[in-house]
Length: 100
Image (cartoon, rainbow, N blue to C red; front, side, top):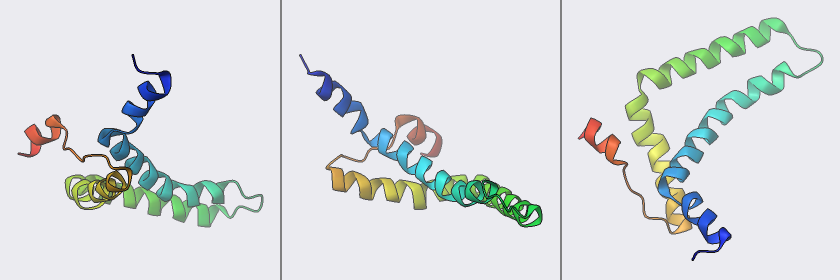
């Protein structure tokens, strides 16, 4: 049978996991600046409010253009990471059914 390291390797080294990691990375890159600002001891609430509004606007745009954003940004990044890890990119069947 597979050793425990091999059992962990297969799910972690899958294209689906790479896609999820890319999505998480993109979300964190949007959220982190606001998070850091909110943790400062000399916070300017007016500036913080503007950052929150900007982040909400960004998320609304991402939601409105979710299919294009996923296909052109997230999926392309995941393909690049997969190539570096020698993982075969594959489109999930559920996505294929919804988007032909």
